[in-house]
Image 1 (tube, rainbow, N blue to C red):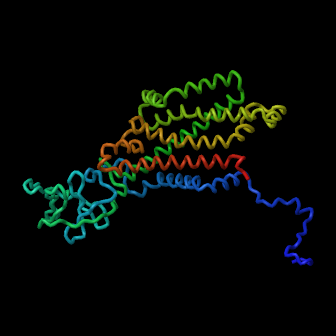
Image 2: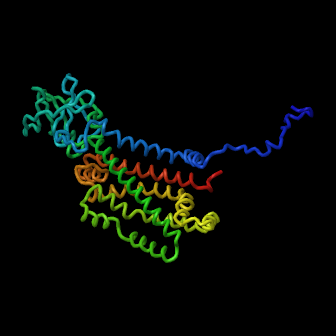
Image 3: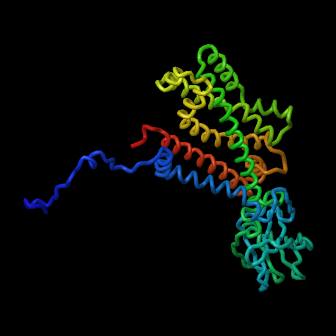
Length: 387
């Protein structure tokens, strides 16, 4: 309280304090990260992408399986099992879809197939021999469904267990779905990043030259872009397969030879908008070469749209690679890809939907994550969003 009885004290303001900027000073990179981190969807997408990369790179070393290892005794095993207790031994039996029995441990690990003994058609029993003890699949009652019965004909008690040997189950050839999902992530991410990097380089060079030179050069170069854009990507892949055969390399070459057109258009538009600015005219006045003007002045000022476009190209490349593999134009068997996994799962989709659910969820989650990152970068790199 001052001498006049007012509850407010007068601040002593000098010449130095009048020129002081009260807000916190941040560099451009810090400001971009600040605005990007304030978007939960973009930050969540970045976390998912980092987790997916670690999942693809380090995951196969943990599972103990390979993408091509087959175990025909454990075919179409789901991640959640109905285990039937065999006496008081602490062991369980799992009934497969092709009416076989597999021995389980109490923790849910698959041990070994239980040997088939005989089939009693009169009693409608499929009898198996578990260490001298007959265990039978009873299919006599259609309303009750399939049941496991002991030697005395009593129904065995059942419980639900998680599959500890194959966390996501197995496919129609007994291969571990989790390991194949990890290798599929490797294929998809590798194709996407390589294609995006090549498209970034070609698009920047092509669009930069076209936008800066303009005139007839720009008209000719853009007509080439229009022609490439009108030809379907599937035709490119088929033509490349004739030369290189189907596989990983064909997908990369196909994506790298086509997807740069959108990047070139973005770069061309940005450079045409910037090349008449004062700083470009000043650079021309002092004798700077056109190559130096494009490389040192124009391209750095276009990095925002370029980064956003490159980020948006990655989910598109992932989807295209998965689609091509799905229709048989991508990676060849036994190599794992999300597209080939979806194709393999169609045969048993009704009985084992989890085989389709895992790769389809991975594709959707990856595409959403990169789209969220692109949206966050678009707002973070926009100077109009800065407050």
